[in-house]
Length: 401
Image 1: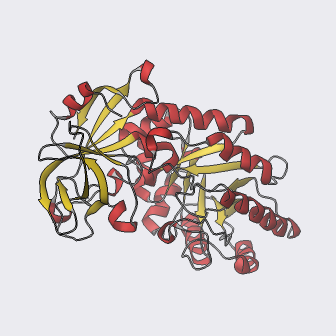
Image 2 (image 1 turned 90 degrees about the horizontal axis):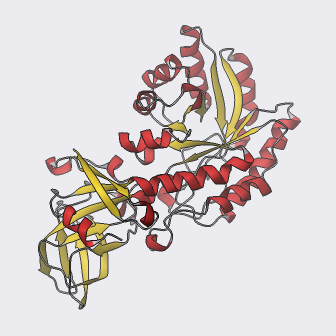
């Protein structure tokens, strides 16, 4: 994935660090916007995936809106020139401070998840003499067929308003004069690679739209969230998700009312493949059943494998050996869960080798911590040469620590 020249450059940078291929991000944004344009769909980038400033500014330059889940994300979006009228604020536990930040910035919409939240937003809007535009996040009870930690659309999850609550919600909304219902919001989960799950979502949205139509309500906006996954196990062959199939599926199966606008909140599928965690081998330790490659990155830099057994393709960038051995690749953190991969087949690995953990652009740097008083991971940026676009070759980088 990287040339010898680029790997030599990596050798001169203090590890661990995140490496971002900005031309690959551009290619991904080109594909997503081109695929959505024929349908006039609106894409809001899910900030929680990656809030690196360089990344955010590049995404904003393509005209994407912002999907935020905290007050600080809203402030970051404003700082990075995302128009307030393209910012949506989601989350099951919005604080009063965060709601006030959103109200003060006149954002496009609050995605609301409970009656108590509706009441609080209305109360705060009254104090500011403002009308808050809201969408109801409805739990569609659709199984996303993904890891249970990142499934959000079932009744057992904490997210959204259940369908049997809708009558009460409409009754309450009639009394909340500083709220304006403009949309319905749905999100069934993350890292979804089986598109049939989205077909199920479309059909459920159609059912719920009929329920609202029977109650003489037609909203202007339908937001179907995000969740489109990426290829973690074979990223080299699948650098850019199939946005064409994704958006065409919604066009084929969702039944929009006249003039209704469809919104998406994509995060991982936009930034997931453009980021790589580069780390160095500290020691190779012999074990009973396997050998351990101990690297200088840990769960403090990439928590996904420890959090929900996520798989990332891992490669040795500097070994010249033709011999293949089995290793567990682990970090230095004082936790047994600090492991990036077990029983990996890698060329003979030694102290000082550079290891690349791929597909870390989403939920990598943004979830880094200082547990064990570790330094926060730094970011390095590279630009792809035009002739190598889409192949992951880097020709320049700058260190932004």
